[in-house]
Length: 426
Image (cartoon, rainbow, N blue to C red; front, side):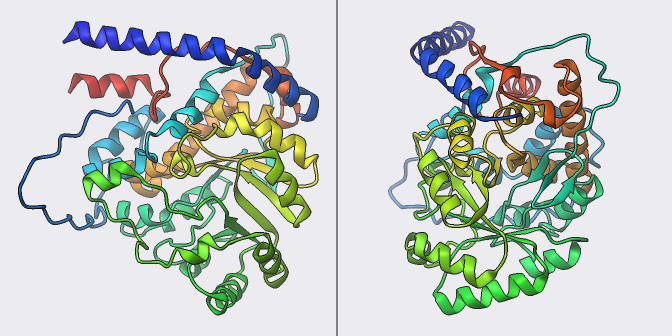
């Protein structure tokens, strides 16, 4: 058994060495382009019981009514382990899984794990300014919470409300998902300053008009239209476990019909700053700016939509180059550590979103768990910046990063080695 594990590890490392050798030229070009144009689960196999009669699909688990931990964690790894213990198996699988072969979700992590930080020394970093701005609002540090809709209602009885409160308590924001519980209007009322409302288009123009009116009336200062879900991807882990997503009965033809003409109409009618979430190429970034986007959001849905796609960090330099400072650029996808945030800022992102980390921390400790996660990320960002000699986010640029050999096979939790060791000991 142990010999088989060692052989598996060796084969994975060999695979990564070959992959790095093949991509070395492209990686060098990526770093050079960024420098020129920016300024600053190995999953266990699932056994399916054989039966002559198909089993009925299990109903979704109810929301967790009480968390087992109070949110007093010393590390992010402890948060992930607590989440694994607290979540029902199918909800954990839904949170951590990707689409089809899950190549994109691994590439998200591989992109971060093959970019090394360059350490500068003898710089006075006694005072470090972590603040940034997004849509004119100051964030205490360059991290915000990405929209995660149906999951929050299943992981916590109050849905997104504790997430909003936790984010605002540490000086940042949560983007409110389209299908969030207890609803985007209730979320706005719970917020001191409603920030961005995310939108899926699930019905006709009359529904869309009413929705945009309500978003504006609720006081949101920005509208994020998700553009990478024209088809709902095949998330095979959910199919295997029988997990039923929220909103499964929505008419997907409306989202599939989304095009640049409708984006123009939404921009003109809403009169809100337009954020396009799900941009993954320089070509679409250029079009986004031409169609009036205030923020271009580099995202691949956390590896949950297009399989065999690029990692978001790999895409970031070409998007920044195409935008040329005409819009703000943010990123999410695979971000699990403060060092990931710093790397994205070095390649031109203004701020970085986290989704899975929010999901882990909400399940681990509710509102206090999310707050603890954000505080730990803030601590990690400050530590990394201090160690590379950066006194503010304005000093971060592509000269501070360099392509490097990977040291492990990328998985959804490969940023948490202690956590993975605990799972192997069970």
